[in-house]
Image (cartoon, rainbow, N blue to C red; front, side, top):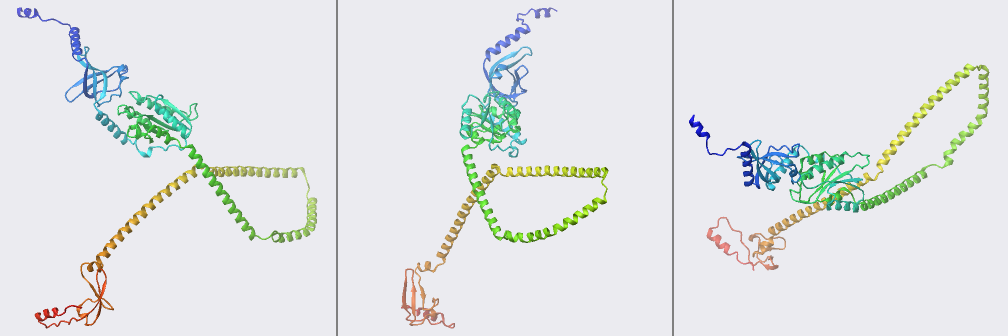
Length: 520
């Protein structure tokens, strides 16, 4: 009992829980007032309903609670994501309610461009596996749009360049949806703009665009990060309106470039892709109109010549009307008698029949029924003819529109250019092959020619008829022609070679070879 009383009467200072928690808070904040911490984001679920964001920073051995207040979230250059390696700048503090410590983040940046590129590659692979970048789902741009929607910043030079280029090429209606093209909300605002343009009614007060241009000037990877937003890529891929992406310079690539229907290297290039040149179209139409007029005139003249040629083969009017004219005269002569006979027969039939009101009424009803049926048939035939003529007119009008002619002309011009290029390549390859064969043949000829042998000191011996190949063919007094490498010379054989015997001794053979001597 005495030991317990002595332990309670110690000199150690006594603190309350709040006091010790406050002392720890002040100590931590004084020592770690401003720190930079590198780690991987874990447990991030987006901003809380209050606008604050709570998550953890971790490495392979420890983890640190982190909080980003609502006012700081709006200033961040990019949106935090789960698994992203970042460098957080802020201050350490404690939370007495749970007796733990945390970092209050004032600034957040990726841990180098490598982390962003890794995240971008992961998104790209995932969206590509879903088919968002397939060329088969991309839509064709309209050849001549009436309204163009532009999603960009209203204060930058991009919108002025686009409007100026469209005005120079083909003035038309341009709708601008102002958005921020850099910062935390850039991706969300551009996504809303693309969905907003698609939501416009076709016959509403605001015209529905025929093509969309999403544009921004160049910048770093962090500046263009908003256009790598996954939601924006999905919105562009799902857009019913064809989308042209013109984000950054020609060397800059974002997810929206892969999801868009067409990618332009610059905003000015997007304007050139979206609209044709009005002056060129007018010149093309004028040329096509002149060709059509010339073709119609030539066709009309050809048909007129054909009619004239056919007319020369037809008989004269007198020849054509001779037989009908004779038949008419014969019928005229028989008409008087036939009328008299017919009148007598009708009079006899009329006298034989009794005309009553019932008979007249029945015949009137029959005549009325026949007239109604003929009228219905005539109306049906009339409406059928009108429908058939309207269908034929629609088909003819569709064939006479300039668009198919222009497409067919472009296809034929492209085919002609391709054939011309193939012709040039084929001729060049053919000439090269023939040149190689000629060179090989020339080398073979030089190799096999006897002149190369003569150049080494040999001579070709000929008589008046042929080449002498053996000494046995030479007889004394024979006129010979010697061909050297630089010319020919005449000679007369002074001795001939005796044909060697098979039984001669070797010494005799050697002596015989020595006696073959000179030909001069």
